[in-house]
Amino acid sequence: MPVEFLGIAATNDGTETTPRSGAAFDPEYTVRLARAHEDHGWDRVLFAYGSGSPDPATAAALLASRLDRLRILLAHRPNQSYPTYAARVFATLDQISDGRLTVHFITGGNDHEQRREGDTLTKDQRYARTREYIEIVKRVWTSREPFDHAGEYYQFQDYVSDVFPVQQPRPGVSFGGSSAAALAAGGATADVYCLWGEPLARTAEQIAAVRDAALAAGRAEPPRIQVAFRPIIAPTEELAWEKAHRTLAAIRQRGGVVRRRPGGEGQPENTGSRRLIAIAEQGERYDRALWTPTAAATGGAGNSNALVGTPETVAAALLDYYDLGVDIISARGYHLLDDAIDFGRHVIPLVRAEVARRDADRAARDRRATAAATAAAETAAGAH
Image (cartoon, rainbow, N blue to C red; front, side):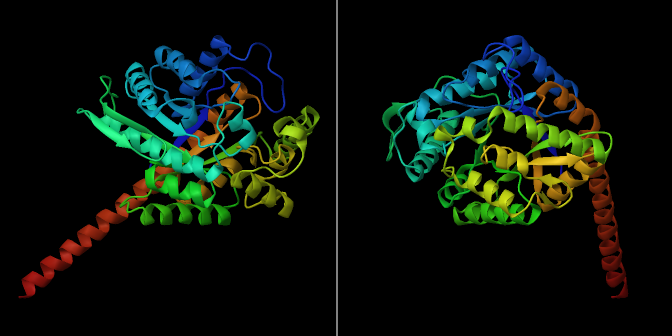
């Protein structure tokens, strides 16, 4: 089973540990960071979405026109545009990128953030709307004849688009969330289901829940699984842990929880962040390399659990997740450019080589089994 690596397509150099050095949208830095990913073995990069951040679709168009191979994962919130319009934007981007687009639909787990842009639905209503939205977008991508739609959140008549994606039948759909409503919506609609990095046992439970949701929705094949981490690597274990503690101190110095949640108090609203906080409260270290204080310091904000160690240790940890059925690894460090290069140079080749070795061994075993079965059948036929 192939493995893919997803990095970040940041529009500036700011992180949890370092304030940005310029404007929110720095086109030169955006392209430079993406090129570092393309040149160091990454498969795709994510353009994230925030209510006050640069428009990710516009930034993705810039990247698609400047790079030749790197694929794009575009985050999109359904409350921001009508699905017929969004489907045309995505199809146009797929044309610009020559078929390199996947769309990550974000339902939104924080009422305060949603209301900044006029979205007053409850979380469960938002997931229901997202499911309807995705179904409309898929149909716009694939329908050559006008159609009507009368749903709970969207109604229109006689719609047909005149721009279609390069990818056929359509671009991929990515989705995330840990609540029951999220699993129901994503299990029914997603090609890729995105999880935040948790201990192996909990990740296995999450994967099982995704597959159960897909089965309940009548799907023959479940979504692919993506898991996200914040790798902290160094040439030795001692140096990696020193780097980890420096990183944690920098996060705390910059405000951590206060900076990420209005008022700086209380539990986050979304289930995924609550899971990360609960895991951090139960322990700092799990499995080979998972480290939770970075998640605790940010209040479980998004992708925030770290993998700490040498490249060999982190690669082995990622392969543990691969063994669970994870075939897309999302990773970004705390110095975006340098860490993308280091991870690409020192971790990605180790993981790819081991996956290739396992695939070759599996293929050889399958050939031997087929040959043995054929020989047994021929022997049985000769006996008669």
